[in-house]
Length: 323
Image (cartoon, rainbow, N blue to C red; front, side, top):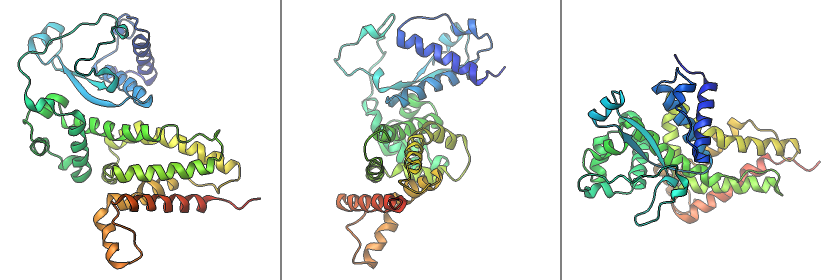
């Protein structure tokens, strides 16, 4: 039986409270007898999204129960997996904060680690995100990624399990970085909210110039209504746009700017203003046809000038004359 959204949310809240309070709880199957594997992963996703919205970032995945004897012992027929966030990782030689756990244990890995296993997770996710943004999900090959990273064919599988999980990890890595960058920028209680809007637009454009793969990925994923598009929108775009909508509504209610649909604002900014950085070869063509063009679009001076000009044009275009 499929669990309702309310049941999944309630169960996820219980797990989150147990983790926060470091207080064990009874097995959820006692309270929710219909709980199945799909429901468990749905609860996991609720709490992972909650932690990402709080500023955490995804740095890896954990695959467990890969041993058939252990699967038999626990009555399951497939491995399980989980998410590793940045506050779960301890640096080499650092002290473990045992007060965060109920009953901490240390597990010593077997065998000798391979040299490729020491590759930073950020390097893998950066490369994967760029490839997904260049050739799309269907064109992306794990074998090609392994070859470009110079690692063994099993590394990606060992760390992420499937291409779908690698895609999700890469998206969490890229968009999580954007969410942290934009967090707290939109607050109409601050003075000069229109200037705040201009600064926020400026910062978004500069960030997108440094990370053009996000816009490039959305240019691909946005063409079809898929589960992947829904994941990006529900997890990242909609939460970020809630703050944008709040600020735009506040400014319009105060008579500072003309009303603008959120969709119009989003596409003007996210897919218009950032285009020169996602379409660099096309943007560069203009350099030869107009002597007034600034430095090449990827140059810091050109990025700054473009961000300044676009943020000014957008804000001044929305501004209403004083009453």
